Amino acid sequence: MKIFDYIEKYAYEELVFFHDNTTGLKGITCIHSTKLGPSLGGTRIWNYKHEDDAIEDVLRLARGMTLKSSAAGLDVGGGKTVLIGDPEKVKSEGYFRAFGRFVESLNGRYITAEDVNTSPDDMEFVAKETQFVKGLRHKSGDPSPMTAYGVYQAIRASAFKYWGDSSLRGKKISVQGLGHVGSYLCKHLYDEGAILTVSDINDKKVKAIMSAYDCTAVAVDEIYSQDVDIFAPCGLGAVVNDDTIKQFKCSVIAGAANNVLKEDTHGDVLKSKSILYAPDYVANAGGVINISFEGDVYDKDSAIRTTEKIYDRLLNIFEISETEKISTNKAADKMALDRIECLSKIHSTYIRK
Ligand code: NAD
Image (tube, rainbow, N blue to C red; front, side, top):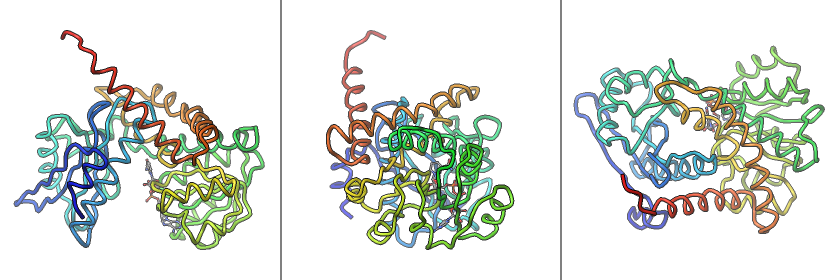
């Protein structure tokens, strides 16, 4: 990978490698943009096979955070950290405190939080060394319930756009992935009277949902071809691809998973098939919205109200997609990038401090 070509193409600000000999900490932080405010993005631990995979991942994820926060109307930029190693083996108090000291050294240009394979407990260690960490247990904590609430708003907005009614009563909805977000989402949907079909690679999670709600479970590879109104991907990314796109019978796709489209062009294919797609980073922004309301105290009411705005934001994006004849994912990118450009320009006006 030609790193400087890539960071120039997408206007990255900073890519930092760090290491601590005592604890074996080895990671990369990427600050994609601080145009709207300090960069914010979680820290994931992953046992990357090659260093290039880690670099590519952190670059892609950090830029995704910039778009997500901008589209959510937040005054924060985009960043991310990947820690390279086996999450079962590397974790310790010293490891996370060494990481916290590194975050502190960036002096607030990057704020971290939990992500894949890191938890609020790990962040408590990070917080002993830096003020630039969010998602702490005694403050906003686990972002998943708010993410699920935002996805629920995204599904309601999509239903309104497609059927002219946001009610989900009697709507057939398939949920793929019954983890932190998927399980909370099932509750919202079930409580509103939706008819649920679910699947997960983990049988225990399927059993837990089936004992809580009256729903149907299907095999992992059968979820795409279900005769449903709405498909809600809440597991892994890239589930809209050349193979699955032929199988969909749904009218709407809206879920929590990041990078739902394998390629951007799959958004064009969905549009040509009249399947309404709620862009992933707009639908799943509840978590980052929640974290952004964690200051000295956590302002939960504002976090809920801002998460509810995902509904109107998506209707705007659907409007842009229609008037400009572009896919909804491209419309979301346009909205996010236009906001960054506009706000960067107003900040260029001189104000005496
Ligand atoms: P999680 O790990 O708790 O749950 C994911 C679930 O998906 C697991 O139960 C897993 O067994 C299941 N799964 C994986 N592959 C599957 C497959 N092929 N078929 C069916 N099930 C499968 O993760 P989570 O926190 O619930 O996040 C879910 C998705 O939402 C992820 O893509 C994550 O990046 C994204 N997301 C999460 C948040 C958040 O607040 N947690 C915020 C934004 C985006």
